[in-house]
Length: 111
Length: 113
Image 1 (cartoon, rainbow over the protein chains, first blue to last red):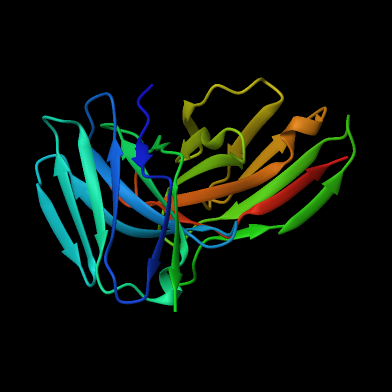
Image 2: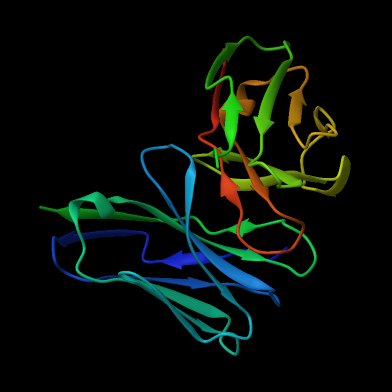
């Protein structure tokens, strides 16, 4: 089954800097989603990009999708201490909700 | 709208026991999916229910089962608990199957002793 894989897995940055995370996957997808998780709590949905889209913005988030390379990136601009969390990409196949998650990126934003 | 709720939030059980976890989706959402999260295996799909029918099942043994009620609330059951079943169990709801964003609950932390 397909599985997203994020790279890098741990990132430590200063407040105000940008954070970039990458994700690759193996099979065709309907959409790709990014989630945030704080300290083992529930996942918060950040953004969804469909397979026919190349770039999407939401506030300080920018997501790109390259289906030819089967990869996606998440950019968080002007990071804040509250952005400290684990970030997961997840791919969704056509016709069902079976998300395949990557291992996650741990992002620490230092005030 | 109220978010996804899961009960209980924490559970401690011993090996061999069984456990039932509950999930109430967002009002109007008909699809409920369950995931297991462990440090070693990460987030893994358990199953998805839509309109009271199981639509998908992940690679978990038969000890893991679930069901969905007519009001879209869902339960999952784990029988004959093993130490390796200790995990955060997350449920997610969405409007339909394959239609986009899934909204997750806070999870149930299960510890098996």
